[in-house]
Image: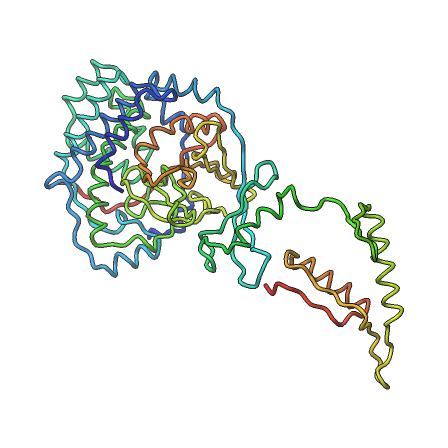
Length: 187
Length: 295
């Protein structure tokens, strides 16, 4: 039978390191004792695409127990071959940065003070403002043409949104009648 | 890969708490034999092949020994095997008297059989052949693998002159078809992974999120294990096939020092012990039809 890569890959067998090292017997004593005293931890590497612009650079994300510990350019990605721009290089900070805001901050009109607010308060406030703006600016007809749109607000998708989030945002915006709908990244 | 400094590099491991001095001297003795026999006159003859034939086979993922007619000297292999047995005897890794007697009785037929078995990864044949020797199967496997090193390294040195491995994209060695013994994440190539064959002392590029043994690319099944000793070392494992590769991340090493795979493979023995305890295996092809003949 002809020898091909496919059947070669299928027939890989395995031997435990213990079996292969068994002839070395006593020579391994100190190494076995040393290995026993070591602390170990598991990590994972997964690939993703940089969310910041339309180039679409490949990134490898390293995590320990689900916590991101490193991001780096993917050397096997055909677009960037491991390199990244300064913004892509700082992607790690999307997951880890003590200076990122973790609570809702609100500055009332005319105020120079930031107030801390709850998510519940913020969602309600945004909904109220959207409804108020939409009600005030909603147009059913443009001349004789039915348009059912609002020109009083715009929606801009963030660069870090993934495809599914962009889809939902787009559906949401169109259901309100928003026509000024844009997105920063075009991947 | 440059090996001229490897003996000196191995000597630097003496006194390390994670290795016994006797293990290091055992490895140095074996390394000396590889160096002595590698490139011996009239050891290996490779029939000249057209460059396009080599490149087409490499493109199809076929290693050199599977398509290049290679002739190997049994006399030199026999001398090499005999010296390896002497190292085994001097380091007390086998029964002295019986192996010393066996050493005197080895004939060329036996050498041909074990070389064919190790080149074609026929572990069953090694198991069977071990019954006619005072060595158990793992010891014969180890001795035969060491005997094959100078042969494959001579083939690799010859092949490098006429072939390019740049487009080789497989998880096994382009020369002997063996699976990698070690890997490095390179400093100069933005973390690109290079696999290393311990038999041929040859490295080639391979994708990062990809198991070199079973081809698995599911990152949920590919993990790595680090320890609190030498943070640049890790074990890459595949939970699909249970194989593992020891890896060194050059980017975590200060300075411009080039990685010496021979030294690192010996120095990282503790990772093999840990991988074994966790149930991971050293992978080996089961069978490979070669075009090696003997004279």
